[in-house]
Image (cartoon, rainbow, N blue to C red; front, side, top):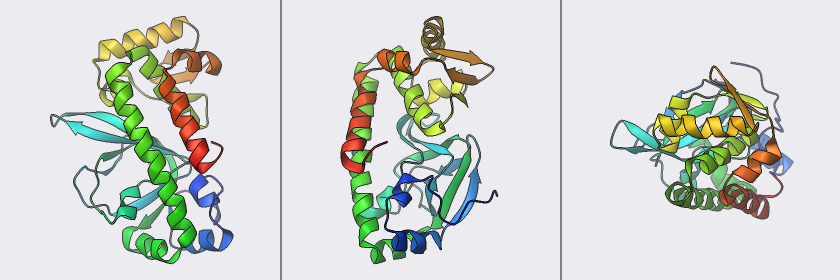
Length: 237
């Protein structure tokens, strides 16, 4: 495990809490390093821990036909994994798959529920985040149904770029095909088009964003809609 300062500013939900509430919650958290492709929850299983990503990001994947899945949400340092606990439900609705390795803060469910009961500011902040998560889920469903693969890939790369806090991040075509629910050949064609437009470069599983503005122009409107919703409800991204 790597050391994380007692009051990390890296998670936006935690940073938004009043000092006393934040410190009280952090006293029960432990720093962990999440590994790429690590499965934190399986859909339908009991949630053992709540995670606040600080330097990592996590895909929420809904299983389809047993051996494949579709990404329906993405959580980085703007959010929390385990938000359904605020509804009194401790069963994971999705598979939680680490997409970006890095740091996070983890708290056990009993201690989290204890803090949730105690802290009114935490309750309010997580209710707002729950709304944002529901909006993202609905937007992703519409995007997967109506938009072309290239626009969807550009949107996904922008969402990942936001959470990776770096221009280069590791992801394979196989993984992209899995989480976007398309054939690998479709991902290869879409990625090649973005490369030819000099928006990204791809080498041995590493994607580098070369032209952020161009990538935003290539993405569907869903990306901007999701950012606008987050900023309207929770503040600047």
